[in-house]
Length: 196
Image (cartoon, rainbow, N blue to C red; front, side, top):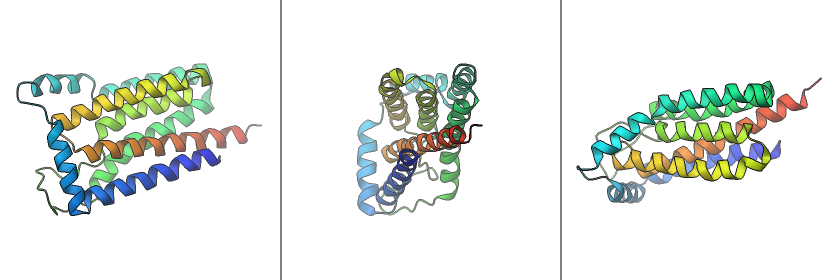
C-alpha cells in the first residue's frame, strides 16, 4: 500500500511543481517557451507529423486501452482489470479537468491557446502504459515500461513539434501517469486485501 501512496504523492507533487515553476514564474515561462521553440517542426514536416497524430491520437489510445483492460479481465481477473481501469481513468480525466480549471497567466510569453497543461494526447499514451504495467506479468513490466517511455516521448515530441503543447505540458503528463499508476496500485491492494 505504501508504494501506491508513494507514487500518488510523487505524481501530485511533481505536477504541482511543474505547474508552479513553468506557469507561475516569468523565468519558467521563458524557459518553457525557449525549449518549445527548439522542438517546433518546420512547415515542410508539420503536415506529416499531424497525420501521425491523427493516426495514433487519443481516440486510438482509448480503444487500445479498452482492449488491454478487457484482455486483462480475462487473463488477470477482475481485480487487476479494475485497478488498471482506475489508473487509466486518472490518466484520461485529469488532463481534461486541469486544463479547464487551472489558470495560465501571461507573465512572459503570449500563447494563443488557453491552458494546455497537461497534454491529453501524451496522457492517453501513458494510460495504455499504466494499464499494461498493472496487467503484465512481473517479468514483462520493465520492457513494457521502457517501450512506454519511448511511446510517450514520441507523442510528447509530436505535440510540442506541431505546436499543440509546450514542453511543460508533456512533462506534466508524465506526473499524471505516475499518479495514475499509484492509484492503480492502491485499488489493486484494496481489492486484494478484501478477498473473502
